[in-house]
Length: 267
Image (cartoon, rainbow, N blue to C red):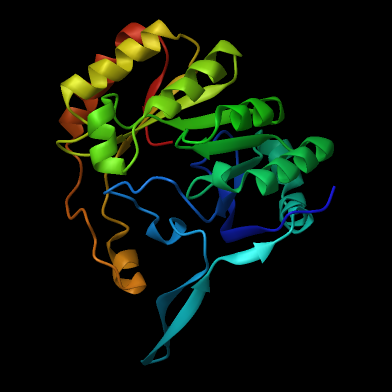
C-alpha cells in the first residue's frame, strides 16, 4: 500500500485528558463541523494556514507567523508514538487521534491505526461522529476507545449551531454501540445551548435506548480559544467569559444517574 500523507497540526506528548493513562495526542487538520464555540479553530481547514505567535526574549517581544499544519507520513507519526511506549506500558495509556475531526483524513488515519495495532499501541479516536458509516465500520476493529461527542440531540438545533444535522452522527453511534465498541460520550456544556434540560434529557433518553456507553464526560465551556481567533485574524463567533457554574454542573451530573455509568467533569 502506498503511504498516504496526512496534515498534522500538533502532537502532544504526556497528555492526561484524552483517554485513559498517559497518552500522545495527535491532532489532524480538517473538520466538517463549524461549531460556534470551537476551541480549536486552527483545526477547521484542511489546508495549512498562518497563525501569529509572540515570543519574549529578555525585555523584548518578537511577533512572527507560524504555519499550522505539516505533512507527515504514517511512519513518521508512529515514530513519534514509539518514543512513549514505555510510558503507555506503565500507565495504561496510548495514542489518541483528535482534531478537528480525524476521520476526515480517513485513509491516513486508517494506515496509522493499522501500524499502531502492529506495534501493540492502544488507540483512541476523539470524534464528532460525522463521517461515512462504512469508515467507522472500518476503523472500529483497530480502535480501543472512541471519545464520542454528543452536542445537541435536536437535528434543527444541531444544524444551526454546528452547520450540519446530526442524523449521521447518531447513526454511527448506534452502530458502534451495537458492536460493543468502548465509548466515552463527551458532552460540551455550552451555556444556554447544549446545557438545557431539554437537550440533556434528550441525550439521556437516546443513551437509555442504546445502552453500552462506558461513561459520560461533561466538558464545561471555556474561552481559552479567544486568543486563537485573534492570531488567525478571524472573528470569534461565540463570545462568553467566566467560569462554568459549579452548582449547575452537579445538577447536570444528577440528570444522568439513571444510566448507572460514571459521569465525570472533564475528559
